[in-house]
Length: 362
Image 1 (tube, helix red, strand yellow):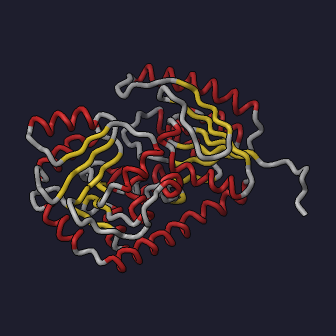
Image 2: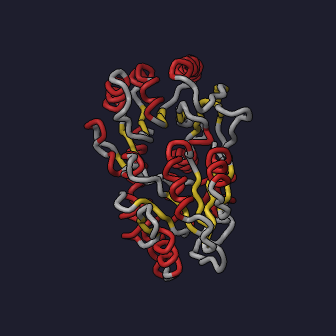
Image 3: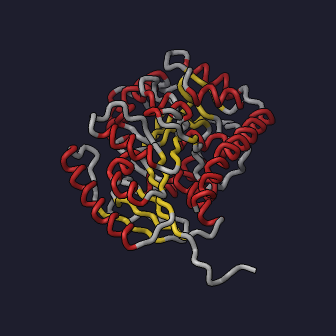
């Protein structure tokens, strides 16, 4: 019989990001919910309206609306103001575990975390370009963590510290998605959708728009902050009409955009090492929802998606539209769905290793 007077464990998910950009942290939320562990979010509110969550938890959101082009000095000032706020929250709560979401938070809270001791870190990006002050402190934080995770299998030994792979799984999208989770081929114009960061990959996206310019077989959709500005201007100047553009969107809109999608676009160009070796959030929705995925030829994800049969690696050249069309129209539904199911089984097996590590701590 369960002891009703037993004190429940309590955890915190700590990040300098806005909750809207932390959808895959829900892996930990699901674990805490399943194991009856109370938890809080401690993060920065970067938009006018506070973020919401589908989970029953406390939300400590430090409001600081940061523009995209904010300078380093102002950003660090905000970070240290948030640190003071978060340290107070941590001090007032006896957390049994702190989940650190992102390398910036791991760096910023180095002393706090080492004092607490029971913490783990999820690295989101590779940081070779960071300054010489940042890397040693980050490495020190990782060294003293109970364990560390990364969504990029290519980054397991990043900074010489071993990590577990935590494959991205967007529980909120899975919960909200209304279409059948089986492959459904478009009988009309094929809609290829990109959702995410725009400015960093703008030159690649412009090149793709030019290659697909007014091809009646396709419509290209780009959603993300600045898409409706820079890409719209480029499309209008070059007479490109088969394009749909939208700005920043909240996580609860992701499933709605995916319901209108025939192919998920995860083609960034191969210049970015972090992208080339990672399994990103949006492309990971492909096998979970049984939606085909395009990615850069030769990248880790293209090899993985072709292995399981739910994706295609492509080169950004004039042949790209024909390659995509021939591949998409040639998909065999039964084989595609089987491959997606196999990937999902693999994902659960990989992520179960993290659950075992959590069991040891909390």
